[in-house]
Length: 500
Image (cartoon, rainbow, N blue to C red; front, side, top):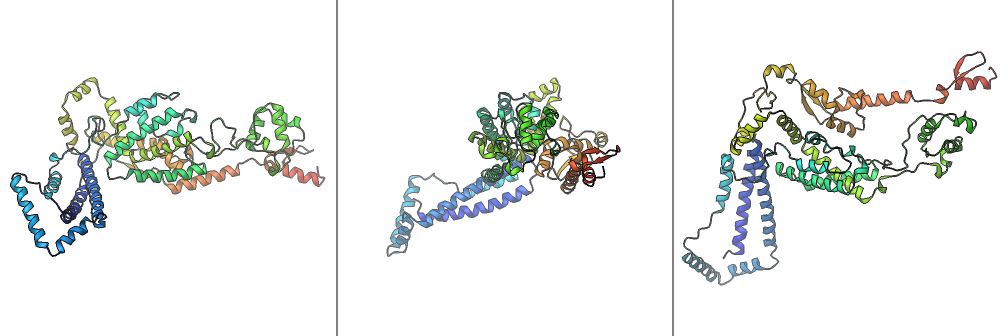
């Protein structure tokens, strides 16, 4: 029977061996270049780390000695009958081995020796984690099931799988009228799929801790009404009207009849620009606008104002949906590399002929794996073709794939060739980076890749917009008695001086 002191000694020994094994594993991981070996090494490190934490907790409980067994054993060893206790335990060990002469316990070092052998020879690795054929041992992601559930949602535009891989995290583009309980179930399913594959590809990443940070950021944006796709005052079907339209001076309109001549469309634009209700008949719009024409905004009647809504008026279901969308955005960023590789893999499969598909499916699984793991001689880093081999060098140079373009707005992403570089300005990653900077992704910012340049250009565009804003004193034109065309300010000055 193992005593408390002996168990403590064994735990200390195992902790020291685990520390050494984790150090060796970290060194092996830093020099690991094959995807399969890297994932297996990270999973071994995770298992060692969890084992270390469990042993430390058990050892702490032994030292606390809440049941008093350790103190009792120490008393027996340090009392007057310590030799009697020693011979009693020696007799117990001899009797046990007489009864079970062939019962040999595996030494602790054997398990750590196997870990060392696996690092030296990957063929001896016991599969710790499994991937489907579509996932290619962590190189790609498999979202076919999520794509099927997405296409089954009511009112959702059906798209092919390749398009879905590019847009599955563009949740802000989906109309909020379609985000119901079925959409919530879809989000939970998508989150489970992404969390599972991320945990298998990057086992050392603490997903729960990162999700907590995502929720903290979400709560802050949600309370301010600034969360993407759920901004303040932008509820579907609400009476909130954005202040758009021409905000001209109404002081020169002396009667309701003059306002009525502007028409329904212009009146609506004027009401929107002032944050007033813009519905109703022509007479109602004229009355509403004429009523506040010469009145300070602080004295406006609340009955004519458009109702303002904030994020607190969303339902609990909508808040839960928005919270899940924040998590999906984070998962999409973490799996960006796998998603891009998956898109290339799907395109490569779609370009194959029927015979090539049959040849690919007829091969055994082991031969496919060995082909994937075979190191292709590609010293210049040329792009791979549909067959997984480097394309001809002349074609590589023709398309300018030897030229690299860096985009700071996309998180220092590197694009090979001018075609991919120009295409990325209209892709979601660049648009997301511009949205993070608070800048619209318009044609003004084409070929702008530095954050500082984009902010400076945005400031110029905004100042230009202020300079061209309509001002009644400057832009309303009058004609004097001699036929000269002058602005309103000059006209009023001349009229007050009696020079007209």
